[in-house]
Every structure is written in C-alpha cells, then in structure tokens.
Length: 316
Image (cartoon, rainbow, N blue to C red; front, side, top):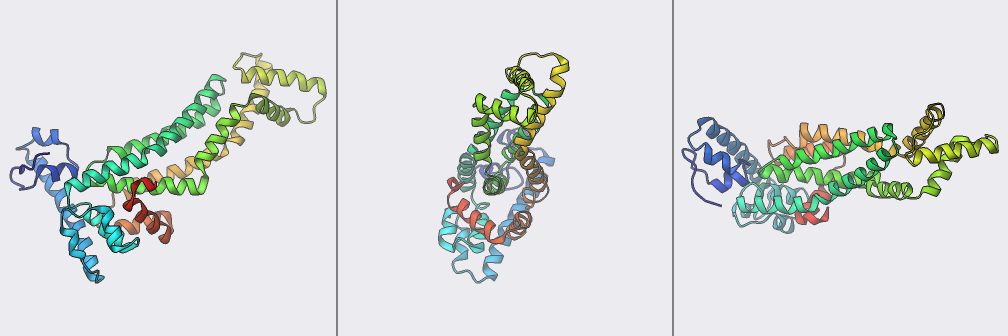
C-alpha cells in the first residue's frame, strides 16, 4: 500500500483506506473532489477523537506505560497482555487499533477469519432444512426458515460491508453476539439435532402419526399413516385428505422448530441494536464499551469475552 499523501489533507493513503475505511478506487478517482476530502476529514476527526479519548482515559486512570499505545508497532493482542484482561486492557486494545493502518488491516482480517465460520455453518444448516421442507411441499414451514435465513444473512452481509477500523469494531460485537446466542440457545446443537431428526424417516413418521391420530381406531390410523407418508414423500394427495392432515403436519413441525422463532426474535433485536448502537457508536472507546454492556446486560461477561477476542480472535 502506498504511503503517499492525499492532497490538502496530509494523510497517508493506507491510513485513509485501512483505518478510515475509504475505498482506494474512490481516492484515485476523486483526488480533487472537495466533498470527498470533507468526508475524509470528518472521519479522521472522529477517529482522532476516539484515539485521544482512549489515551486520556488511560492517563486519568493512572495506567503505567499508557503512552506505549502511541507506538504504531504496538499490536492489539499485546495491549491485553500488557494491561490485563479487563476494562483497561480492552480500552488500550481498541485505542491502539485506530492508530496503525497495518495493525487495523491485520486485525480485521484475523477477526473476520475467526467469525465467518459461525454464520456459514448456521446458514448451511438452515438452507438444508429449507430444501427438505420445500421438497415436501410444506410451504408454511419453509416460510419460517426463509425469514430467519435472510435475517442472519443480511446481518452478516451488513457487518462485512463495513470498512476500515469500524469493520473490526463491528465484528467484535458480532463475535460477542455469536458467543451469546450459542450460550443461550445452543443453536448448533439444536440445528444439528433437527437435521438428524429429519434424516430419520421412520422415527419421523412414527412421531407425526402418534401426534395426529392419537385415539383414532386402528383402520383409521393406517389410512392416515399412509396419507402422512405420501405428504412426507412429497406426493400429491386428494385435497379432502390433504387439508386436514397437511395442517396438522405443519403444526407438528412448527412446534418442533419453535426454537427457530425464538432465535429469529433475538436476531431481530441484535440487528436493530447493532445498527443503532454498537456498530455506529464511535464517540469513543468508553462510550462504545458502555453501549455494548448495555445491550448484553452483563458487564463481567462482556469484559471477559471482549478481552479474549481481542487477545485471540480464534477464541470465537
């Protein structure tokens, strides 16, 4: 990356790209674009304020060696190692992150590599389930799965679209969210269990038949069992048979997959709060940490997990 200065602003190109988050092509095309220069200057002032607020806070707390953060060779994980897995270490780390283009670029790449496996695995499992229900013609269930799939995909897409040091900051929050969701809902475990269940046709038919026919006489049980099997095989059945049993099958699966709705609601909350607070809260390290703690509601949990992610992104 070039270290050339951008006209009128005296800022290095690598800083503008990797810290402030502007595209290199945009800079090349808008060398004399005053509006672009204004946007860059505004982003620079915000970033400088973040950096200075972090230094000021550390100084006021009497942290020894806080000036080490001014060294552009100071790495994010070293802040946690030097100042501890606590608020002080976190402030030092996210303050240092905005000071060096190379470090901002390296950490963004590292945390992206760590985080991307979670949405990838969740989306793959949801897609498999969606295809299974689609092939059976069970549209009301596919509609539910499609909504959660799009929600997760859109949130992940938004996080990836953010550039510069804000990308790392946003991925810290996304990383915390994945840890929180796994702790609270065991998403992987539940999705894997659901996939295994759908891959067991004998158990599935037995459970659905038991749920639907219940106290009906034996000959009725066999007739409805055949209809249920036909529906699960994706075959067309007579409308007068399909309407009643089809609806009962839909109800059965919706109950079994009720955890999907619960997860969807939590993702909606995360999407709104990430967009409104944690991702766009760039008024300083302390304000950002407070916003994250407010969202998750557990100070010790946020501090502990943030420190671990900053120290080693693969912790996620």
